[in-house]
Length: 142
Image (cartoon, rainbow, N blue to C red; front, top):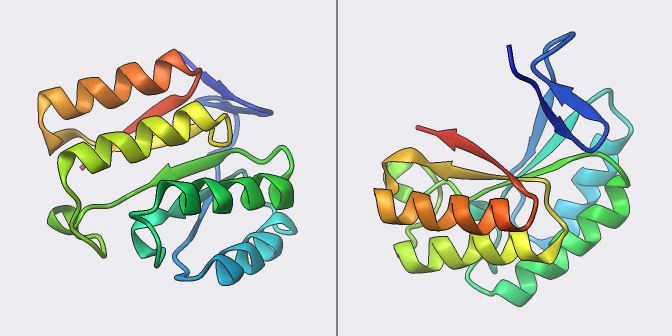
């Protein structure tokens, strides 16, 4: 079996990895929850950006990511925007979905991004290419 290394975690070997999500609305609540999670025996933090009140503002998203990185240290961050169509909190255009994921990858603040595999081949390819070009791994979800 192939493994995937993300910071100090090897996914695909040893014990199953524990991923803890944050579904808070405000930056303050997101960072507060992250501080609590940092003290737990979690392996990866998943930030559900679709819950964030300013998810459409790339600068605000990067600001929260910077805060998460400061709070979490070396814990891997998985960034997920679950679209309304896939059961998430908000609708988003496919171009904005691509931009959000690729810009997060470019920021150097996330380790993994989640891409909905039924978003369309062009969308999935654009996110894969943008993430991989910046050393970010991709989780495919449905």
